[in-house]
Length: 87
Image (tube, one colour):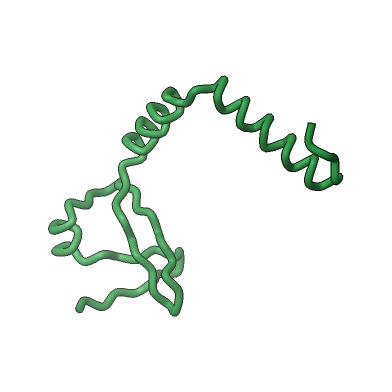
């Protein structure tokens, strides 16, 4: 298991053989997932692909249905919170 250090700017150098195996190159973005107890995971992410997927998902939302569901949930919450009887 390779050993590395954090430098004075907070940077961590990943060994070149690991970067090569993982296909990492300068400018790649990594997601940091803190697992607790001093452990974290670095995951290579494709931000453009994530944004593209989010846009595609957002376009598939039925806005009218979403508005109805929000209205219904707001009504249920208000009736529960202020003890308003059902209609």
